[in-house]
Amino acid sequence: MDFNIIIRTISKYWPMFLRGTGVTLFISTIGTIVGFIIGLVIGIIRTVPVPERGIKKQILKVVNAILSVYVEVFRGTPMIVQAMVIYYGSKQAFDIDMSPLFAGIFIVSINTGAYMAEIVRGGIVSIDKGQFEAAYAIGMSHYQTMINVVLPQVIRNILPATGNEFVINIKDTSVLNVISVTELYFQTNSVAGNNYRFFETFFIASVIYFILTFTVTRILRYIERKIDGPENYILLANQMQVQTPEDALHKQQGANINR
Amino acid sequence: MERIIEIRHLSKTFGTNEVLKDIDFSVNKGEVVCIIGSSGSGKSTLLRCINLLEKPSGGEIIYKGENILDDKHDLRAYRTRLGMVFQQFNLFNNHNVLSNCMVGQVKVLKRSKEEAREVAMKYLKVVGMEQFINAKPRQLSGGQKQRVAIARALCMEPEVMLFDEPTSALDPEMVGEVLKVMRELADLGLTMLVVTHEMGFAREVSDRVVFMDKGVIAEEGSPEQIFNNPTQERTREFLKRTLEQN
Image 1 (tube, rainbow over the protein chains, first blue to last red):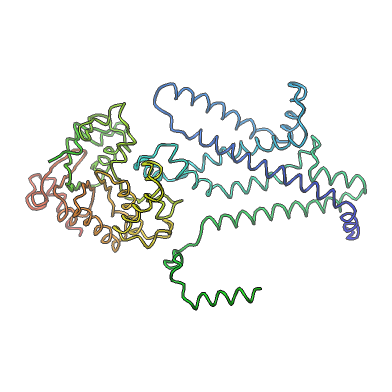
Image 2: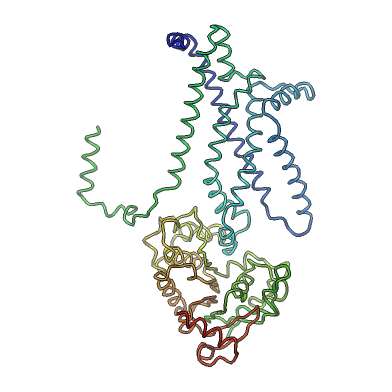
């Protein structure tokens, strides 16, 4: 490995790497968020308690069947194949001309949605039955129980799995180069095609990918800790009136030093 | 005396297992009724049937003259009239103490936030938890959680409080603080239906004691009668067994 070539490649082609990184981050972020929402909605629908009889039961049955098909199909086929089928297929069969970027976001979203649906369902099932019962006992409807009690806990609990999906998406957007989305892999390939230094150029790309995924994991861990709050409850910590003049003075001095 | 809840021929089966058999039973306004009996006698199921967390297999539950098992009856409105305290506390884990007590008032009773906060503070003071309003349930001890759970139920200002073994999941040293709160509520004249293993509490606080065995009400009467002169052999046996343990 020639270190000078790496430096030269970066200084010459950095705008391409930067643009590629931007597109990768954009697609995977939007894709994860939209996929999360899709998964949340489907997960909720699939855990609605089925009534014993009536039209509602039939509707729920049909909807559940459709959702199962969606989850199984998108979980069971490679994203690279989905990309080809959706991007070129929509053009040929329905005459819909998607931009590669839009197609990329669309594919990543519905793919993530299929995985998240199962993750959310698992999250809802794992919530203690007592939480539902306590909410029903004070007169909440199923919908109110979900919104006010269950889902906030589910979202907290599935945060690590969501982070996982995000990391996977950052890496897997690279397959979208087959429909010529100009993400990081596509850009790296172009650079390497120019300078013929495949090893050094792709080494740069791997470092960028790692920085992206590592930062995302750290940020999510931080958010988790923020949500959880401290382990113990300190009685006086939340009562401002216990602040003594000494405390106030101390704080002010601290602020002055920092300035 | 005004009857609040009257139960007629109530039965409940889980599969082929008959948990409640033809229960007839009623609660009057202002009365404290304790239900005692060994595990698996159906006492918790009876309580859970009353607020329909379990759907009864047969019979009637008459609340203020209306059969709430009718299809057209508003189940949720009925449930707000009953306060439930669970063995496992079941505080909402994502809410702090104050908002555990507020969420039902705001979402179900449609009270304003200010009013809900005032009511919540009032009842948190009753149970002695007003200093902990910003704590999350996982930061509290069992006894503290159960006191908050009682306050949460009181905030809905129910007609009847149902207690499902409120001290069974607590460490021995925390049982006292919860029972103390319950005694105070009884003194205030609240209608209470308590499933319990605390014989001392049943004896001192209740107006009436119901002894359940194998899905039926075996004996019912004043605490003096049940604890001092039980008429049934199985009541005597049960009391002997439990009192020996203590």
